[in-house]
Amino acid sequence: MTLPQRTRPDSDADLRRALYSGTVFLLPATESSLRLVDYARTSLESELGPDPRTAHERYDDAELFDRIGRVRKHVYTEPAAQRLLRDTAAAVGFAPDRTAFDPARLRAILHGAQHNPRAAPVYYPHRDTWYGHPGSVVTIWTALDDLTPSETFVFYPERFARPVPNDSEIFDYDDWVSRGWSLKIGWQDRDASLKARYPQVTGAPDFGPETGFSCRAGEVLLFSGSHFHRTLPQQGLSRFSLDARLVHLADHAAGHSAPDVDNRSRGSAVPDYIQPGELDAVAAVE
Image (cartoon, rainbow, N blue to C red; front, side, top):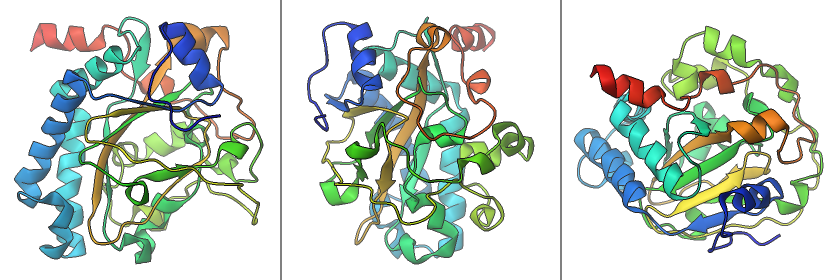
């Protein structure tokens, strides 16, 4: 498989089939993806100043965590950001009337954070499906800045359809959200990673060759949630990005999906996704 491809198939159905087969697409920025990036960057700058990537030089860990946490919550919960994400997904082939999605999560991979025990789960190699997402899930990702391959993350293509020994059975989605939505939004509790258990690889398997990528701000990366991948540590500058999960509901109902070879997580996040028409209903009462 080629990682990533820069052009997509002509039809949306063929795009989804390619994603379920393991193809990764890095598509040009769209008007809505650039607006979403601007929305998130403006929110970050209001908390961190004009150069968020160097904020670790201005704030200690605790204050930086609190400031970024406020931005995470804002981006995740605001209908304006949710609509921009919906429009971004629609522009690359996921029609709003057929797609459920979770809101965008702001990811902050801070300079040197790989040395902080609280941040350890950020760097666990994993599949998104290990967190209660179905085999039909597609991850949509965009960076807030231009990034080199050392600043993004890597895929292990040989493991896309081959099992990796793991403890994903520890993850129960219903139990996860029953303890509060801070875990769902991500990194709202500074000590969450010291108390909660996050699925990870067991043993020392051979992952096979890794494949990375560079990108421009606002470009749209699409990949199956079944892909085995790993976030890279950052040195010098921090990295900020947005990601969310998409599920084409008809495919999900029909069982069209990527291989789901080693996921033993329990529960389903899909009922908590934003469903088709839900944002329009919110707008009608605003």
